[in-house]
Image (tube, rainbow, N blue to C red; front, side, top):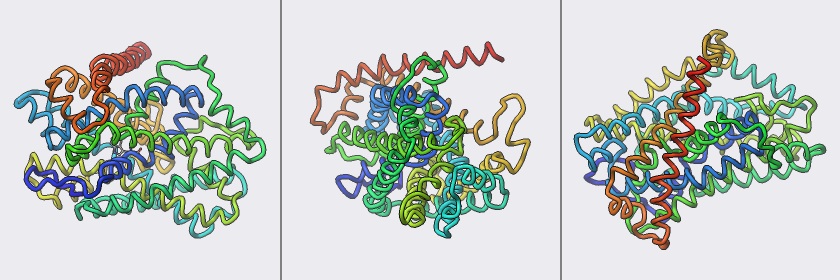
Length: 461
Ligand code: TRP
């Protein structure tokens, strides 16, 4: 694969599975292991899980097909893709919104990935083996993310890694890595699940995660699930447009996008199934504790597995690599835009976006304890990292996806849209189902959820 987005020399994926591997690499990341479980915990557990699954199937998958189809048809970066279909129109701003969103997400994504790197070191040096209960792992987490030097060092380290990979041109590297590392990550998740569900008292957590109680569901639950679906599937900012632009016409985009969604959802599901049973085995456990959830609970499970220290270290290596393959796609969208549309060199684009994104990540890094002000901003009553994640990781992606649906469903010629998404597919009969979803169900559902949130904000404000 060759991630140079210029139209000349545009290559397609190296192997048959190139797209699926790279797109799964982008999709599977901290969103699955870190973000999904803590959002599920905050939004009622099983009810959130079921709403999430329905959203992935009815909204996430059609939107992914739309993005991939748009990229494959135009063979451009997100901004260029809109501009190619309707030159000189405002639609290209949807692409620009995507580039800005990607850049903003990268800034705090790198902070959380930095925590993962720090935990990798902890696991490798045996720190977890002396921690026997979640109270202690919780204290370790607070101490880790509240330490200025730690958070900044590892945030910087992760950003440098991301920039280095993207400068090198991603070529075969990712495809090959993903092929080995993703299955390994799944195996370790499975191991964690097995240990977690067999712990004494696990039933309570299993019920929390799998036995839905829809009575507490609100509009906020839907927005959280919708935003999480877009975040986890890497939708709403053009990453899949970019990756789709390297997909051959001969490939079946329906199968490819369905496989990516399936793997991604499975990874999130397993992460939750590892975390909640273990969490509920301790007295006074809080599923609503927020962004630290995975980092507090997972080390405590490793502690109860033979050779847990080793498995723990391997797990955090895999999670860090998964985060890296996701961060690459965030950076790549910005770089593709700057090189394609603004004529920058690849190296300059990578370095500049990396540096600015690092700087924007600094307040996020300090907002988990190091700075009291940033940890609890006035008015919004949340930390800077959470604020960035709400604005960009949720609302901006949702808005981007809505505009994309309107564009693909109503502005783009249906024949071309169908060529982009369905060409080479063994399931042409799905064409009309997809068109219906992308024209009606997706924009209406996304629009309604966004509007509802907006009204509530205005009323409360
Ligand atoms: N999907 C990745 C994760 O779950 C994060 C990510 C990568 C992303 N590229 C994206 C999110 C593009 C939104 C848009 O960790």
